[in-house]
Image (cartoon, rainbow, N blue to C red; front, top):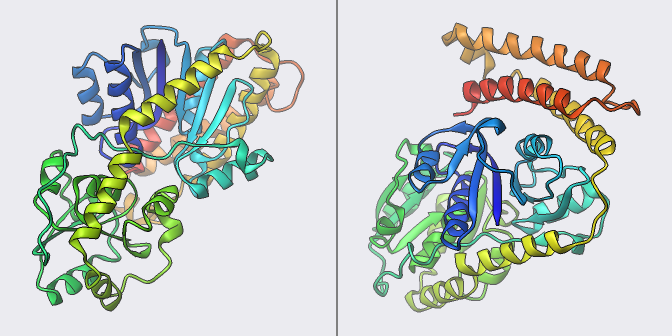
Length: 404
């Protein structure tokens, strides 16, 4: 099977980038032909390219017509659908707050999936359907990489903070110091992104993390306190694993302030035996192998479904409506909160933002003339792809300028 995966970036180790990396490599090992379409290319893309997987930031660089498109991030999925007007897709929402994780109303998107309950409810609300119509595709972990560590000590000695934001760092440092723990910190929030996490985790007894990082630490056998700058959930236990995984060890669980006393209280709940049971449960239920089984089942079901021939006029009108929304969202985001600080230090950023605004307006006018915002006369597919390539080009420039 030929599978095209879309993701907004392949240059770092954010959650969706790791999901895309493991999905692509896993499908490749199972005999599928795989490519990735992304807006931002970097070291993560290089890892896939070394395995012979095409990673492209323009659809014309792809070497095959896919059988199915596995979409992360609605704007990149839309670009893929525009390039391959006969190919069906599924869409996976990875978040409940960012607009690019929201529903994409395009006829060829045959399945909608969510990685946790909050994004599932968001999709259902946006699509006007029952929650049960959205498949849960929970995050998984590659058990061949994240091997079990030796049994935890009765009393913890070393702790690791995996930080993607900063608001909780001081509190974690205070709590671990009071508990007599040696603390190391990694992650983008502390300027220390590592590529040896499976081996590194085995050196620590307690890990402070959320989301995918929490799942990986649990799989290794660490005791995990679920916390980040957004709030504190607490110590993950064998009794809480299943429910917390459905929330992706993330935002919905972070209901308490990450204060030193609260974090210290969670450290007092440390139990080596319970941590082992929690790890066993994650390894039993959250394996990448099981995840790939589920994904392949979805692909086969979508391709086996009877469906009418593609209605290109309706398809293009739907894509045009999505593009108009994309442009509006981009226009709203042209001036980020720290824009004044950015442009004060970087005149190039000021010029880039002005170009984005100008091209945004020009594309709106082109789309209106082409009739894709409401007219019954749809533009030709070739014209639409030209509009999308222009949109993708300045979107990529803008993203590269302000995403850090």
